[in-house]
Image (cartoon, rainbow, N blue to C red; front, side):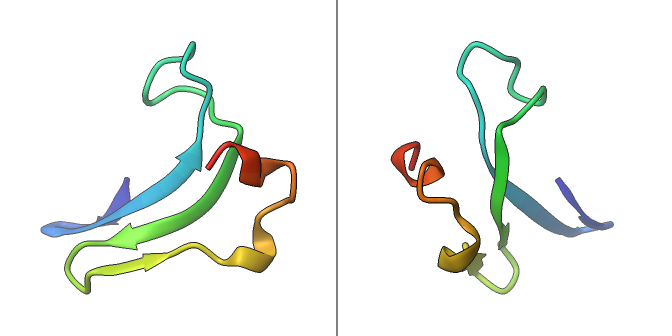
Amino acid sequence: MGGAKKRPVYKIVVADSRFPRDGRFIEKVGFFNPLLRLLKIPISSIAHDTAGYL
């Protein structure tokens, strides 16, 4: 999670279910800004093998 006070921004990550929720992740794939209702996942930055997780 990031952002400023009362302005949250969330990271979208690919994580292994065996690890803690806030623990290690495989890859950061995008972000979500709830104030702007903006979900950004750049398709070009996602590796072909990572797309299988989504």
